[in-house]
Amino acid sequence: MTTTADTAVDPQFIAYMAAFQVSVKHIAVCEPCLTMQPCETGDALHGDFAAKQAAWTAEQRLQACNERRRAKRRADSRARMALHAANELVTFGQWQDGRPTATPADVARRATAMYSGYLKGELITTIEGATALETVLAG
Ligand SMILES: [Zn+2]
Image (cartoon, rainbow, N blue to C red; front, side, top):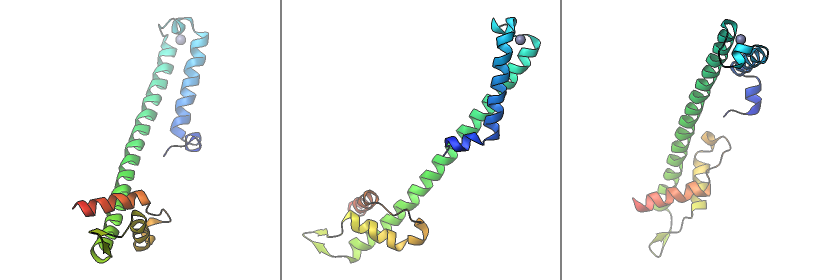
């Protein structure tokens, strides 16, 4: 996840902002550049700014993509933990009126207990428990 604090120390972002400032400062004092017909100096400065902006944007996109992939893997793995717990509760737990008595909260608690070592304090939620319970009952 990119936060303001990360951005503040991101050297690529700092380089991009510095190039932006140099480009803008030059435009302010250069008539040809101001009228969108860059001089030779300006051309290099604006080109450098565009390149650094593109590099930074590409890096942001890559990081966002990696972050989405990590989040997906994490959600999949949590879903498997909840499914395991739901399976146990449905298979070995009590039933009443043709339904297991286990609730989504029971599934969440059970999964959290089974996988506490992997969860690093991020407990399986009741919503995740409900999804797992539905999946097991549907299957
Ligand atoms: Zn210029």
